[in-house]
Length: 139
Image 1 (cartoon, one colour):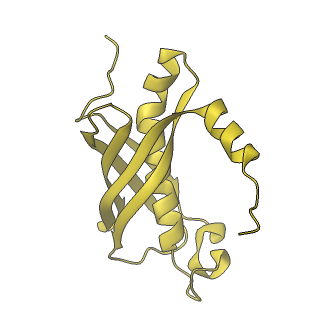
Image 2 (tube, one colour):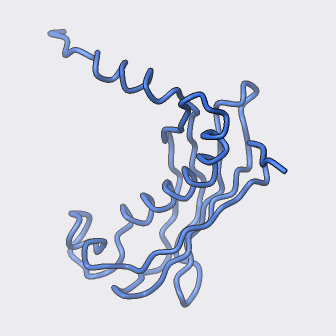
């Protein structure tokens, strides 16, 4: 049975925090812990992965782009620890293009972050073409 793009759809990703993901190495702080920026990036990646297979099966060249994050980072995670990310589709706009996800991150000790993330379904080539066509204005 094919999955549908509808509330309740969920997915997970798991990573191990590496040196490259530490706040001191991504410019988001001076401490040797998993950065908020990387946590949010992986939350976004989980949301993308949750819906992309369904969009791919539609065969129309569709994907999603992030438009909003409202995330709390509640606990620090050291290098080498595993983190599991979860994204659950909790809302859709009336036209089916606006998607709202409840996202969370848990390390081996417990919850480290959670919040909401919004994405919009776009035609990948059209979206990229419009971006390439943008010109700087002398305004």
